[in-house]
Length: 145
Image (cartoon, rainbow, N blue to C red; front, side, top):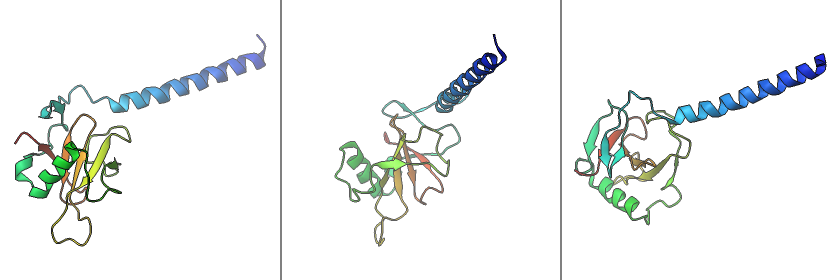
């Protein structure tokens, strides 16, 4: 085999390794670590890793319960341009998932001139999170209570 051919084969092999490594990294980042045992929160879905506070839906502001009912019935939502859109999780306060995993919904704040800071965030495994401070902190919502 000529030196030029060897170099070509080596470069193709290196590119193949990089591509395989890239896809393996993406798959590994969406699989939760084995030591993070999920717990059941709503409809048999796993919730966030241990350490995140869980609150009953009934203990949240009544508007959160109304928003949850709208989510379950697919709307109509008070802010159709903003409700049901992808939640990016830029603050990394929720478990890392693929970019389109979470959706956000406005929980109206009485007396607020705008959407306010309260949101419900849903995950594709039927997880439900609540923030009252525009993503600074979250609690897992237990809809059974």
